Length: 323
Image 1 (cartoon, rainbow, N blue to C red):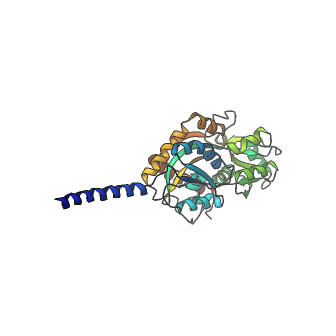
Image 2: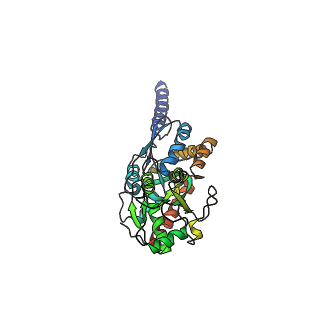
Image 3: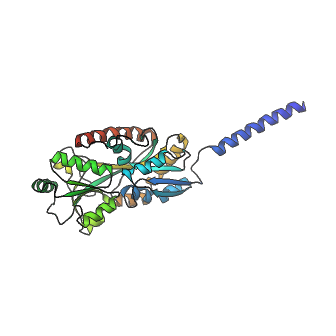
């Protein structure tokens, strides 16, 4: 009888120990240091968005968040790091249109599969691009840009700090039938500085990068690149008002290495949604022209796949050949 009781107690203790061990090993995001890799330089719009959200997100997750900039190769260096990271809830990619949607059609081969290796967790929203020029050139509108470029083929140069802006400018050139020289850059801030110094004359830039220099009269906005005018810049025409159907805009969101548990993804997404709902974060993001439009894992995944198809079409129509 005593032996039977002993066996029962042992079974119960073994079960409890197994449950405790499983709980201890279960992926969590609380009380940890979480690294969010930004695949572009500090000061880029992707970097700006996550740095504005990170303090509140850290509170929501009860975790320390480190923003880690790993620029290079149109975002592929940083994305590859996350794709190869352990799926333990401690490493995420702050991705977007360039890295996760445009790159698959711009490169013949990549060191990671953007669909298989990077799992969409939470979209933050979308950000309009601005078409800006150096104020020294006699260009105040998209029609002016087209006319000047046709009269002076190859005289203007444009900067391309990421895949989205490359596709945007090449699409514009093809639609307008103009010749403008491409100059690649590693970051939007550096491209903007060279526009100000007249090293390049044309740039598609994000709101946060462009607006301080526009306000200082060092750069001139001639259009927004979305299909419709921006609510924050209602007097600035959309490029599509001259070139029908033209639509280039950016979006941002968190991605996790493949294999990350659904539980971790849901908890991170819940924290992102909660952070984006706070008045403080909303005011900060609105200040850089960001439109908060969150999506969770179940809807963000299909959105990314659709975006890959959309950008593939844009790239094909622009005439860009994969490298």
